[in-house]
Image (tube, rainbow, N blue to C red):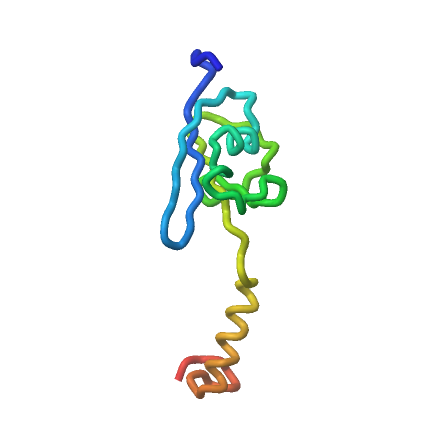
Amino acid sequence: MNHNQDSFSVDIIYALPDRAKVISVMVDSHTQVADAVLQSGMIDFFPEIDIDTVKLGSFSRLIKASDRLEPGMRVEIYRPLIADPKDVRRRRAEQAKEDGRLNKVTGAKL
Protein backbone atom coordinates (compact mmCIF):
# COMPACT_ATOMS: atom_id res chain seq x y z
CA MET A 1 0.00 0.00 0.00
CA ASN A 2 1.40 3.44 -0.82
CA HIS A 3 1.40 5.83 2.12
CA ASN A 4 -0.39 8.89 0.79
CA GLN A 5 -2.48 11.38 2.73
CA ASP A 6 -5.40 8.92 2.72
CA SER A 7 -3.50 6.37 4.80
CA PHE A 8 -3.06 6.49 8.52
CA SER A 9 -1.83 4.30 11.35
CA VAL A 10 -4.10 2.43 13.76
CA ASP A 11 -3.13 0.32 16.75
CA ILE A 12 -4.44 -3.22 17.10
CA ILE A 13 -4.51 -4.23 20.79
CA TYR A 14 -4.98 -7.58 22.50
CA ALA A 15 -4.54 -8.00 26.25
CA LEU A 16 -4.24 -11.04 28.45
CA PRO A 17 -4.22 -10.90 32.26
CA ASP A 18 -0.41 -10.98 32.31
CA ARG A 19 0.58 -9.21 29.08
CA ALA A 20 -0.65 -7.08 26.21
CA LYS A 21 0.43 -6.67 22.61
CA VAL A 22 0.02 -3.58 20.44
CA ILE A 23 0.69 -3.71 16.72
CA SER A 24 0.45 -0.59 14.53
CA VAL A 25 -0.67 -0.98 10.93
CA MET A 26 -1.05 1.47 8.06
CA VAL A 27 -4.57 1.49 6.62
CA ASP A 28 -6.71 3.73 4.47
CA SER A 29 -10.25 5.03 4.93
CA HIS A 30 -11.67 2.05 3.01
CA THR A 31 -10.17 -0.53 5.38
CA GLN A 32 -12.59 -2.52 7.51
CA VAL A 33 -11.80 -3.31 11.13
CA ALA A 34 -11.49 -7.07 10.50
CA ASP A 35 -9.07 -6.47 7.62
CA ALA A 36 -6.82 -4.37 9.87
CA VAL A 37 -6.82 -7.10 12.53
CA LEU A 38 -5.80 -9.67 9.91
CA GLN A 39 -3.19 -7.31 8.42
CA SER A 40 -1.66 -6.81 11.89
CA GLY A 41 -0.78 -10.49 12.20
CA MET A 42 -2.12 -10.48 15.78
CA ILE A 43 -3.69 -13.90 15.13
CA ASP A 44 -0.20 -15.30 14.49
CA PHE A 45 0.69 -14.38 18.09
CA PHE A 46 -2.69 -15.40 19.57
CA PRO A 47 -4.26 -18.17 17.45
CA GLU A 48 -7.21 -18.40 19.85
CA ILE A 49 -8.60 -15.17 18.31
CA ASP A 50 -11.52 -16.10 16.03
CA ILE A 51 -12.03 -13.08 13.79
CA ASP A 52 -15.55 -14.30 12.91
CA THR A 53 -16.81 -14.33 16.51
CA VAL A 54 -14.49 -12.07 18.51
CA LYS A 55 -15.86 -8.85 20.00
CA LEU A 56 -14.03 -5.71 18.89
CA GLY A 57 -13.97 -2.20 20.28
CA SER A 58 -12.37 1.20 20.06
CA PHE A 59 -11.72 3.04 23.32
CA SER A 60 -14.02 0.58 25.17
CA ARG A 61 -16.96 1.03 22.76
CA LEU A 62 -18.06 -1.97 20.72
CA ILE A 63 -17.49 -1.74 16.97
CA LYS A 64 -18.32 -4.14 14.16
CA ALA A 65 -15.75 -6.09 12.15
CA SER A 66 -17.28 -4.53 9.02
CA ASP A 67 -16.93 -0.92 10.27
CA ARG A 68 -14.55 1.32 8.33
CA LEU A 69 -11.52 2.64 10.17
CA GLU A 70 -11.01 6.34 10.75
CA PRO A 71 -7.89 8.28 11.77
CA GLY A 72 -7.43 8.27 15.53
CA MET A 73 -9.21 4.94 16.05
CA ARG A 74 -7.65 1.98 17.73
CA VAL A 75 -8.93 -1.57 17.57
CA GLU A 76 -9.26 -3.53 20.81
CA ILE A 77 -9.73 -7.28 20.53
CA TYR A 78 -11.75 -8.50 23.51
CA ARG A 79 -11.28 -11.90 25.12
CA PRO A 80 -14.49 -13.88 25.64
CA LEU A 81 -15.93 -13.66 29.14
CA ILE A 82 -15.43 -16.78 31.20
CA ALA A 83 -18.66 -16.17 33.15
CA ASP A 84 -21.64 -13.85 32.79
CA PRO A 85 -21.00 -10.81 35.05
CA LYS A 86 -24.64 -10.80 36.23
CA ASP A 87 -24.34 -14.42 37.38
CA VAL A 88 -21.07 -13.66 39.15
CA ARG A 89 -22.62 -10.71 41.05
CA ARG A 90 -25.73 -12.75 41.91
CA ARG A 91 -23.62 -15.63 43.30
CA ARG A 92 -21.44 -13.20 45.26
CA ALA A 93 -24.53 -11.55 46.82
CA GLU A 94 -26.07 -14.92 47.69
CA GLN A 95 -22.81 -16.03 49.32
CA ALA A 96 -22.64 -12.80 51.33
CA LYS A 97 -26.17 -13.42 52.62
CA GLU A 98 -25.28 -16.97 53.59
CA ASP A 99 -22.11 -15.76 55.32
CA GLY A 100 -24.16 -13.22 57.29
CA ARG A 101 -22.42 -10.25 55.67
CA LEU A 102 -25.69 -8.87 54.25
CA ASN A 103 -29.07 -8.14 55.79
CA LYS A 104 -31.30 -10.93 54.44
CA VAL A 105 -34.26 -8.55 53.97
CA THR A 106 -32.71 -5.35 52.58
CA GLY A 107 -29.47 -6.71 51.15
CA ALA A 108 -27.53 -3.94 52.94
CA LYS A 109 -24.07 -4.66 54.29
CA LEU A 110 -23.99 -5.35 58.03
